[in-house]
Length: 318
Image 1 (cartoon, rainbow, N blue to C red):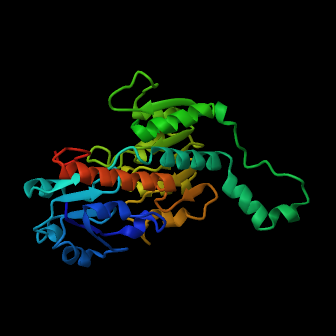
Image 2: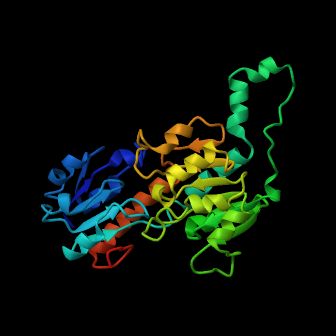
Image 3: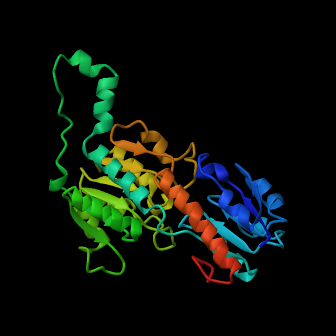
């Protein structure tokens, strides 16, 4: 085995994990960051690309004549032009299941923080209001015990199922929206999830069918106290509609880890509500617990090994 392997955006994977497992396949070149105008020149002589967020398509792949395999360090691969890769015999692999525990853990953390108004209460202490109040405690805004709440899960893949397990342990009634009903879960329509849920967490891949699946019409069905959490892809929701819902108090809280353009753009509607006490915005970190990132790299190595042996593993171009 003597492959030239290029990692294009190592910074997105964190600076605390090793890439040494790839050296057994040949020569490894690691770039911390690669701007769009640098992509083409950095892959002209490579056999394998390892990439996280950078877009790869005709405009930057056409001169990569040696390219045999693209390894996406994620489950979603909407940043890769799969049709172009199929036409030009470029294999594409993703990784699956590596981050389920990490994303579910962050989802639950957001839900608990928003249900308990922790951002507000922390601010009440840190800005001096508690000290100045002369009162020993403060229990408003009102919060509720989790075992009184309904948690609706939109998308019941590995992450959705893991989140459902946590929600049940917390005592929530769990309902879910899944295109193919699962007898192990209480599956209902998306409209019913929106109507009945106190917490709605979204765990869908981005496709033509799921783009802005949570829009103003779905938000209008929700309780005014409902908490919405998106840890899937930014574009599966209407960001402007959710922003308006927070501003106009149509929903009770919002937790977001993903954005239609990343990093979050200066003109993203969420910029208007980033300091609201009932809003939590994080920088697409839910997938990235240390253990999850190590598993991800191990999975990529397994994908490359399988490809070299002529086997099909985690291929998304088939």
